[in-house]
Image (cartoon, rainbow, N blue to C red; front, side):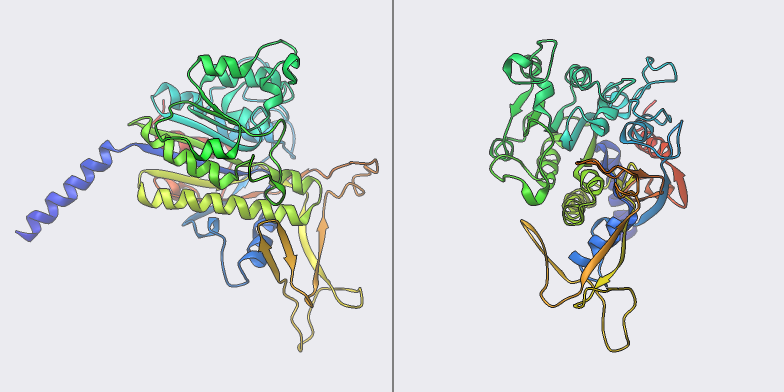
Length: 409
């Protein structure tokens, strides 16, 4: 009797799984190298701890090169993940002729009836979100990219970049005089422009456009909490709304874009702050995926930026030290607060190196930035087909696993 009951229960579980939706959540830490992850762990969690993303059961390294260069950009790398095809640096999901579109995972998922969503801390028309929602031979063609995004009609678009959604007559950057907010509203979008409006939305919204800044959203340590939502708050809202939109399931891409900007600026404090905020967003995704077993969750980066490395400590005499004496410790101790990262008094100050320091690149002009490097990046995953990620893989392989998981043609 017990055996019969057990078999019935197992069959019911199997049937339930067959009829519940399949989901893919892809987190991209733009410019997030392994050292950025490691140092964030050390100084925000402790030496013997892990970030949430590091607890994912399957992990590997990802090659990032572009079709025409060892050092990639977000356009080429994002295109590889979104379409499974390598392309040229600065191109967005097009074939070698620069015109013919390479179908994206978002377009394929939409065609099969999945709900789709895009979240970023950058302009929505910026490179990474563009690679999942548009096609262009130039990532700089943001007017056209924003127009394509509204015509594509993803269920959810959250980020910055209001300037490319409004004509110049209304204070925007569009020269074609098209008001994309009006176009979006007429095609069924609910539009929100601040944090309070976003957090107050009902779960029944079917199409949501949230734009919270004229340009990129601010660093987590500097954002106006009355206006700009955090990355983790945007993820929380998305995971309330998307599951109810389609019985098939959903695809969601989440970009922590300001990691890249902090690394370009060789800004240690905001680099750590942005990786820590991405990790908080990942925790929300992990909690969801643990409940919804048919969810593949992936965390990775499109490339490494800055060549970030912890290279030593500055002691009280001003000397840079690397190795401790037997009678001392040289561990970093910081306190992570809402508005910043604070070194604890009396502790050794960290000394960092940046392979792409502007001076080493001979960029001595004011406002010069560091750049990307060709380093492999880290990937962690959980859920269906996560076990396929092992060893060293191409960034195009990420598309293949997502496509397989969603059963796309």
